[in-house]
Length: 313
Image 1 (cartoon, rainbow, N blue to C red):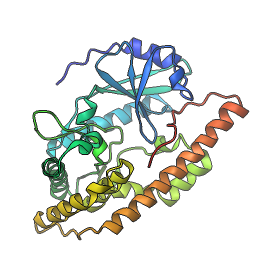
Image 2: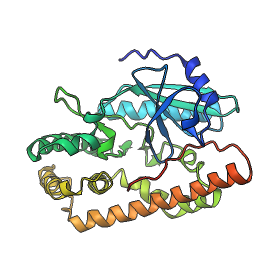
Image 3: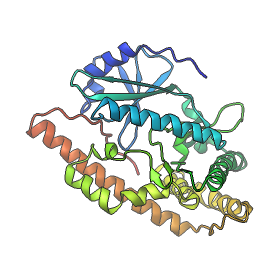
Image 4: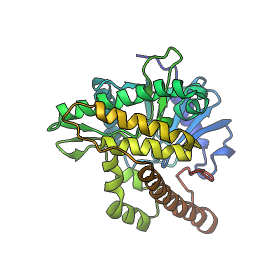
């Protein structure tokens, strides 16, 4: 297990001077490495060699403890299923505004070896080798699910930007552990309410009742996970790779054990999925930005969630 040389007191000092509405104005120099739908990942001056993902505020220390337990248990199951997980450390505290905050700290990765960058730079024969490694991880996970169907089911956001491919050509490492999707006896273990808190209340209510369950269910279905992987290639500007990877995916389906009956994919299905996914997340982000404007510019209140700028989808 990697030893993390992180000073929690320094991270708390960073948190206490952070303006979530405008993180780039931080007095402690910070580089924004990436935005998730509800989180942001920072490279903070003074915390060298690590990426720090800030999750949205929690209501209590009890909620944070439950969330951290979810991550730890989820990662343990992933490892048991044969999926390698990037080492991590969870650091939580109460900030100056009495909000409960957790940071997921992980080793800083080489950008060129993260899937969405790497895929741009590979020849077709190299891409085939790398993609088949990713598919092998997915097979391991869903075989694990089939063997533990009555007890545990693991979900996975498998898009290529969540995988790191080491220089030694070993199996890829999964690093986006902030959404620990797993079910025990068909019950979701993650309290998804925390992921709705960054939305205006009416939009959160609509999301919860109209499409949240559908979005969650995708990550438990092998075929849908691969559709999501391929669909996200449009967002990454890699649409020219889709035909070859779609063909590899269909070959992969045919190679699965007989108890896996997976229908082949067609490109139109992938494109239609991408358009729907783009609409859903674009719709939610628009209203979150409206909510931020009202909070900061009209009501003059603090806005506690970090939102991305314009996202290319």
